Length: 183
Image (tube, rainbow, N blue to C red; front, side):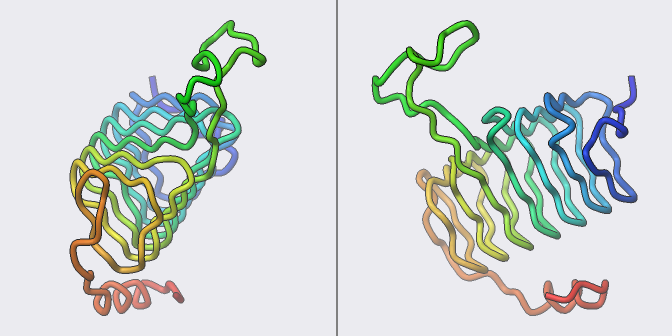
């Protein structure tokens, strides 16, 4: 069964969404131009993408109806990425959030938007925690855990992710300008 693009809040041009995706709240999803979303994608949150986005296979974005991910232009999430926009706090203030558990018995929730600024990219099997902003041009290496905001044009790796080195930006910005993007 093909993905029903008409269910989305907004859908740009040249968008390809695999038929094997699950978007729980499509009315909260805005897709820009030149976007590809691959097989196995699962999303429970609001999602807003810029242009020239790739979301690879088996990416999960969770956090529920009050959570959100905003992806700027020229960003991606590689295979197996886990974007956690909302989660239980797990400090023992209550039971985990699960169907049927009344709100007064649930744990405290951390629901904070995650933002990918333009040119931010995420490697394979990366996990990003609630409230993180990936600064312009930052890159997260494979299998990293991101718990804090990043600095612009910096490459991060590890658990937790730490700065590794500065990323070259001159050609990236030049090419984006040649494509008509004013940055």
